[in-house]
Image (cartoon, rainbow, N blue to C red; front, side, top):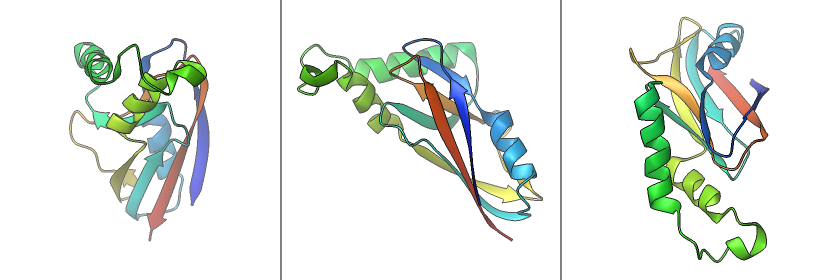
Amino acid sequence: MTKTFTVPSSSRQQVLDITDEVKEIVQNGGIGSGVCMVSVPHATCAIYLNENEEGLVHDVLTLVNGLSRRDNWYHDRIDQNAAAHLGAIIVGNSVMLPVEGSNLVLGTWQRVMLTELDGPRHRRINVTITGQ
């Protein structure tokens, strides 16, 4: 089963916690035990798992920018967003999580985080659940 929801971003770069939306889909998905894949069908945003703490969120964007920012990427001759594409490659476009008892299995501080790198935009998030 796959369900899709949309999240708006409000700035060029932003990290958004989408855990509650994903949890709701899993809880209503009819799968007691299995796996859940959360993915984005976009080339300039990403998904990761970690703590939603203000300093860490800032550090994530600082890390991605440090690894991808530069003024002369070849792709920038098209639309000036090569750093967003490269940042999405670094972070990745999906995460896989176990499902037990119709609930996501997350660590104490783990959250599902959407990383906007070329906003503001409306981003689609796909939640695919498989199992029994």
